[in-house]
Length: 130
Image 1 (cartoon, rainbow, N blue to C red):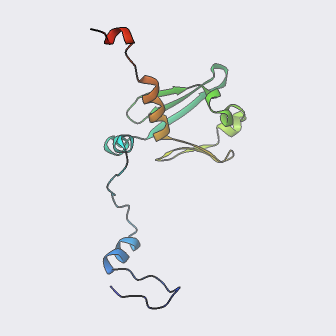
Image 2 (image 1 turned 180 degrees about the horizontal axis):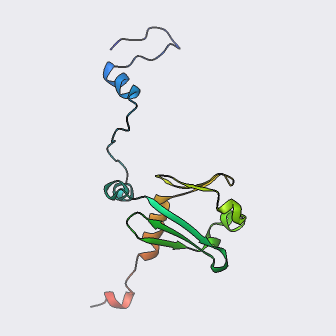
Image 3 (image 1 turned 135 degrees about the vertical axis):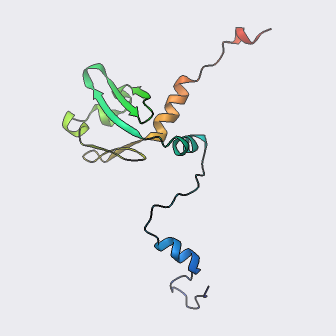
């Protein structure tokens, strides 16, 4: 590894790091983060399909593992106010859904966190008493 002696010059990097940074292949990177990030990586979860039904105030997110997440469309004011053509102008990516004409995103991770919160059941206090 060479040292950069000039201020404002290019930083020096090791040959190994330079090779890694120049590699065009999609390298598998170890997943850091919390349990949701690990779940997404472990199960290779993705959003497979997306649909909305304005008259029912519902949006559906169908995951690649066939699970369905439903949410009220009204829970997302930027989607509720959008026209049908704007809602249909979306792209599904590995990380979530992006609406080009709205410059808006909803993440797969966010859907999973919301789903976990909604499905979390707290035992009533009376069931804890012996």
